[in-house]
Length: 209
Image (cartoon, rainbow, N blue to C red):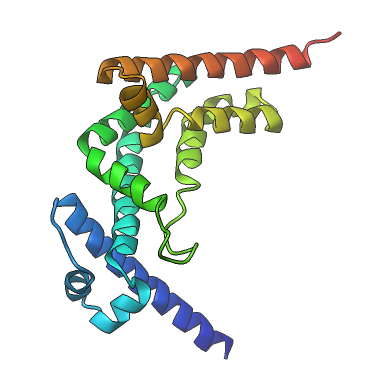
């Protein structure tokens, strides 16, 4: 029985992924789509597709998150391959994130808008956006991991997370009315300041009294 249950769960996951990947392809191409059109491209029955995504907004939210996360991870991964110091790696991750947002601004804004407006669907209908930002920052700052205890390290990663993503861009550009270059430099300045403060605080904590 457990094998049957596990098999069904795996099949459901594969179906879900197939639908989201196909919808993300539509999103990357800048094309509108319906749940039925995505089902046809994914070779999934339309009735089945609507069981997974009862309305189009749910599918758009998942597809936008998938597309933007894929782009961001690829660009940042490439950027980190050529950098060594903590400051360089931090700059690389922010520059890659800025490039991704500039090229796919509509995807990020769509994902953010839909993930915050699921009034007509169950609480778990929209994808959670946790984890990716944290993983990217941890990859970038593994070079200083041994210099910080667990508390300082977690505080550093959480604080730097505020500077990544479309939310920071909206605050700096839409609210503070900064130019694209000014917003980029402001985020870099804030990130550097937090990194240096965390390292200095950690050094002070280990110094003998």
